[in-house]
Image (cartoon, rainbow, N blue to C red; front, side, top):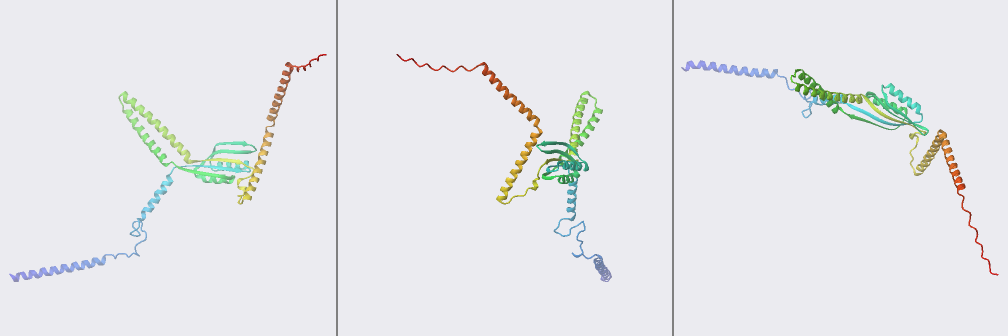
Length: 318
């Protein structure tokens, strides 16, 4: 029995050894075929899919955030407005340059008026120019005359605009469904209710459409209010005084200039209205003469009483 088992045990031992040897060679071959891990110098700095450093944020996040911000800025709805206070010595030339700038940039005057104040003129106007030409127009207006003050504003109406746009789409969908239901309605009560709902929906659509049109007009064309004054001397020509003597001298000089300007304005105003002043003087003279004549006539009708006779002294006894 033992002799029969011995060959069987030897065969099992040989099989076991061959299996162990094959496993060792397979492991060695697998280890040889696997690539070695890359050293830190071999890892790409920016693959676009991983991390440059274990402590850093994903490289794709910043790019996506920047893209979203750029898209938000591109889709933003902004209303641009500005107000400028200008002064010039050459009123006609500055006015012509403003008109040329408006025409060149594709804008128009929404309102314009010229007032004469004394010997100087003043232009007040509201200009509408395309939003993309807003800064260019402000620059050209500043070159046409001296800028005393300038303020510009940017109002973001994106939320209100897109809200109105979404509500308009909802109302249009609602209108289509109501019209479909109206076509299928059988009873008169349902027809009346549906027609009333359709009328209300159409009113909402008209209101939202008008609101969006107004927004589009204000967004696509910016609004600039300009005040142009004709002056004898530009405010930029005045030097800023430093010492007390300079300030006092500047005050006397300014007072003298203003006094001369006021006197000139008065003389020009008198020359412009001399006919009215002459008529006023004639009316005053006639009124004075009439009062004097009435006083003389009253005195002639009612002469003053004669003065009392002097008292007679009593006669003395003889």
